[in-house]
Image (tube, rainbow, N blue to C red):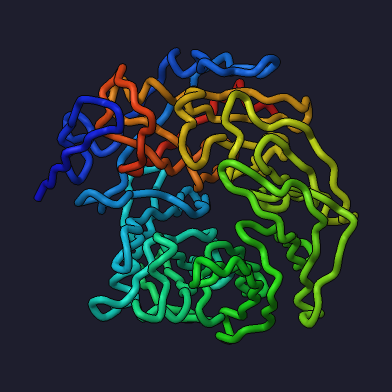
Length: 444
């Protein structure tokens, strides 16, 4: 059954009926395009930023399950690329009865399948709070299960009156499709918006948010998902991201905050060592930390916070700034990924919380060898003109193992006519793009 929604946008005098679920022209599941328009710069391109010479090929599809107008349909958690597949999550965080979904996309077959329906997995009674976000990372354990955690939508719904007692750690097996609860409320009255999994030691690390939105505390959680027990918790956690050093098992983080409009900037990193779980240790390294790559083979991790990149060396526990990261007017970036095959390139999309289209929705490649920023593709206005979709920002992306594909889960909009002007274009639809990086743009 198809649903429609009448949308009126701010100061505009138009309305557009949208089909639910969203469909591509001709009813195709995936649209594939290559266009010189991808290389036409947006209006705010900074001086010195390079543009790719060869346009990429891009696969484009809408996430299934968006069968009604969400409030809104959106992405807030980090994706994972593994063994030719991309794992990602979207959700509808409209209220106490929100919902979130975990998906697997097969890049070879170009097919997407639903792995987990959070509402069905939790099976909560009617009127009981159900989380509308998978805001955490999606990580793969050595046991073959995907691990992730839940977060609220509205800040005013995680109350005892709505039967909220704490967030969930969940896991899903991509082979069997089975999903189950690992832990409910490992820290009472705390949601779990940030995470990273130590896949060898099977420790799930989380930074929390208090159920009471007026309480700004952020707690720290180290949870053994194999033995189902809390290893350590304290009152000083990470709000959105942490650096995990696979080589040593140490987790690095700080108590800084970063939002679309402001940041506390670089702060000293502390680390948690699971072999000494009773205390954290302060390092001399200072970085901004709204997002981070996974550790490379040389022990380097790269972090980003608004308009600055940092390199952190897990071997020496030292850090240095690499300078500006933005390529145009938008700076807020919540997902950054490294090409682990070459160890040379970083990929990210500024404008995570929306507005990226004002700069052309650029996919940026940072060359660690040359210290240069290059736009691989400007994805707006091409997709708006051809498919009626505006890619506005992302919280979830990943790079394939051989570095030839960047997967992006978009917060975006359908329903705004081409050429229309609005004070604010709101998210309403999630889409997936697979951007195939031309060989000439990713030399070893």
